[in-house]
Length: 87
Length: 386
Image (cartoon, rainbow over all chains, first blue to last red; front, side, top):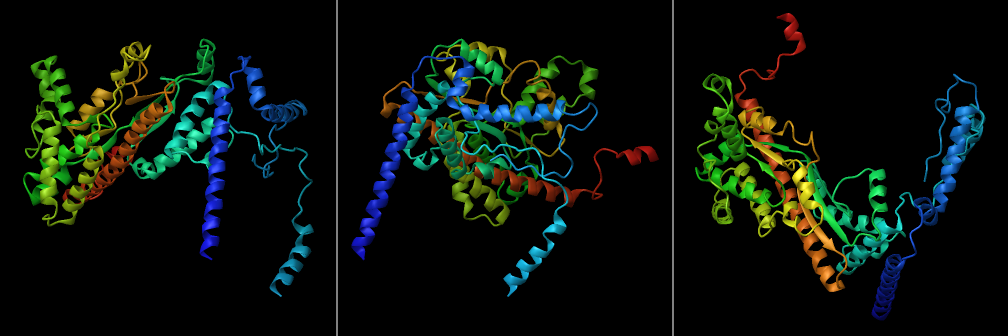
């Protein structure tokens, strides 16, 4: 019983040690990342390409709302419409 | 039984609640996409600091989300929370932040400044500033302390103010008297009669040291020693609580000195020019006798133009040099975080003191106000009646 507890503790300690080492490694990778500077847009695309796709989709959606209807009509969704939140 | 009944009711009512067509718009989910964009040059200094914070145990492996800036932010938030930032925030309106830039900039300004540099920042700064001065109407508390011992108000005041000095600019009667003296030099006899300036020095209670007396480290430690001797023999719980809290505050503040930005002016390029163009930093608190008194008037007089024509100086500035050996870096980071921790713990005790002082002030007002609920300014209704 006691041995099992000690082994479990050792396993947890080892797992924490591995986690710590992997974070150190990840931080080292960030520090070493010394690729030549590109334009801000290229840089943003490199770091977060998904955000650009989302931005493009939201932009298209807004364009559709703004220009897809006749002038004078509401450009916002109807009152009471529940939009799923951004997660 | 109950479950079956609910299921049956749900099935019956499904069509009743459907009131419209499905929306044609789909909002994309941002799951798995970092909600904050940080360029590589933001990440690199943060990663260097993050490694040090991980070694010191301030950041934890579970803080890692794939972004070095977030990693540091999570560790720093937890550190502030553990040291009482949330309790202190109820009274002190200020902020502490770690940045690679000395000045507050818009995103565009930040990118423009970045385009002029050819390497990521090798120094990070810890800055603090106060957005507003906490009002501390202290006269009622001093009166309570004086009932216990005539020397208690002075000792309490010295210990309290000297415990605030390492963390903020304190506005009190010494500043008000100094300001009033300067203003009086330019006024004629008739103007002086109408002015509140001559009343400022006269308003100082006799139980406090004269406004010309400087608070030294020795006088503060003498005051703390006196308070320690007297705390156990105090009869009233109000006085005992005030003295206990101020001793805790003093204990946290002792040995720390204020890190004014000007102390680094020679070491950081551009800082001297910035400071010479900037307005003074705002005080973190204003110690008055009661609300809307001559000290408050002097405070308003002095602060009305602060920050209007130029940026205000930060209240404190500490630097973390990243390009040094890990051991040296860790020592510097530990010093900075020890200082911030002491500040937060001290201000947490200070917040308790200020709350008690405000309660005493309210009680005093309730007790001695001739007509309870009398407004200081006539209301629009009473003006109309007149």
